[in-house]
Structures are given as C-alpha cells and as structure tokens.
Image (cartoon, rainbow, N blue to C red; front, side):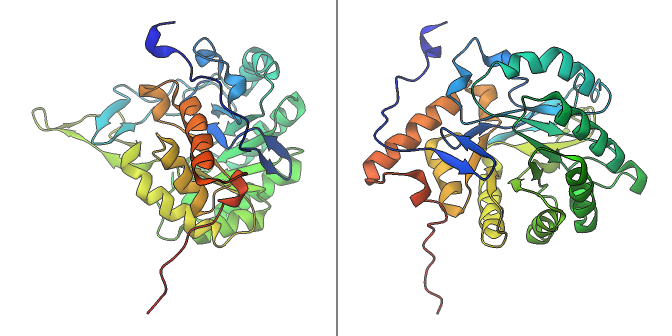
Length: 320
C-alpha cells in the first residue's frame, strides 16, 4: 500500500456514532452506495471494510447483465455522468460467488435489487431472502418498467407502492426503497413507498443528464443519457432529504455528492438517519473512512455525545 493510501488513524471512542434502525445496528452512519463499491471485495485490500457502518453492494438482477455500450462514464463539472446499465452477475451467481465473502464480514450487508418488472423484483428478493447473511434489501425503482413503455417505476407513486407492496409480501428482510430525483414531487413518491410497507427510503439516485462532444456532435455516453452524481447534486439531495424526512415516519438514508464529513453532517442535520458515500469512492477510495473520522471529530468539537442529537436539528429562520 502506497504512503498516500494509508487508512485514517484510529478513531477516538469518546463520541458515539452508533445508528440504530428497527432491524439493524450500525457502528456509524456511513454506508457505501450501490454501484460505487462493487461487492466489497474489490476495496478490501485498501482498508478493513468492517470499519464501515454498512455495505451496499451493486445492483443485482434476475439474470446477468452485460450493461450499456461504452463509453459509460464521462467527467462533468463537480461530478460525473455514468450509464453502466446495471452490469452484474445475476442473482444466482451473486449468491454462489459473491455472498460467501460478504457473509464473512462483521458489518451489515445490504443488497440493491433491480428489475424491469414487478415479478422480477419479487423473484430476486425471494432468492436473496432465502440465501441468508443479508441485513436488508434496497429496491432500485429508477429501473425502466418494460410493461409500461420503459417509464421508470420511481416516477409514479402508484408503481412505487406496487413494487414495495409486492416485495414486502414475500420478503423476510427489511426493504429500503431507493428514490429517483427525476420527479416533480419527491414527497409523494416517498409517502407511496412508506404506504407500500417500506422500512426506510434512501435518496437520491442520479439526476438524468447528458453530455455532447462538440467536435463530433455526438453524445459522449454510449447510451446517450446517464445519471449525474457527485458534489454537483448535493444541494438537490439535501433539499429532497429534508423534505422527505420532514414528512415520512420511517428512517431516511441520505445520498448525493457526499465527499467530506461536513457533507455527511448536512444530511444528518436535515433529518437523515444514515448516509451513503458513492462517487467519492472512485476518486478517493478511503473517503468513507475519512468521513467517519471527520464526523467523530465534529461531534467532539461541538461537545455532542451522540450522533442522534443532531438528526433533524435544522434550525429554520422565523417566517415573516
């Protein structure tokens, strides 16, 4: 390991970062975001990933997927555009080849589930529930609904409700619904997920965008459009997390452009119970550990004993 890849020094235990969900206890609020950390094993040579709060693995579908044509990733101002197309090994290979390593970890493992139909959401979820060693499922409702002309499940409250409701009928595991920001009213979508039985919601997924090569006048992404992630989307994500956390009664997990402890604290203060670190894993592989250490330092400087004291502590200006 090179000198600049050394993990952060031991974190003091004087402040408590423990996060408790009704179904899961995390030693700190920091998860990895689906699609940015592989299956965990890819990063395990860089640091002890058991120091994370939880690990969210990349999307798993009913059958293996090769993904979208290249180029799949394009740099954007303060972020990146990506269109990987949910490339993955499929649920059966995940259970046989990837899950054994994950079962050896001491941190909770959450599996992101993706599908083109409600039936496939249910089928993948059933297989994962029977496999064991998984703490929760995260439903990726940003997927296109092939039976409804390719429209994303996540833009329609009725479809979000149906996906969550049908999965909950067969799932022995808690269900987290991951919300898309590409909607006019994120609160109505979150409420639909809650009504369908979701145990938590996570948000946001990438904002739909595109980039054009002005020399060739062609799209820079092979799939034309992709998801914008990274620091550029953080203000949108914080706003949506605040709106949702102020409305639903289930836990909210904040995602979107988190690269520093201060970023993470914004989401907690806005009402998030935990956060996910995504794009930062690509350009700073130790980001999650640095954020954990920074959050503890923040609590120490503020004289705060437990992270829960900050959750939803946003102080709004008085209305005139």
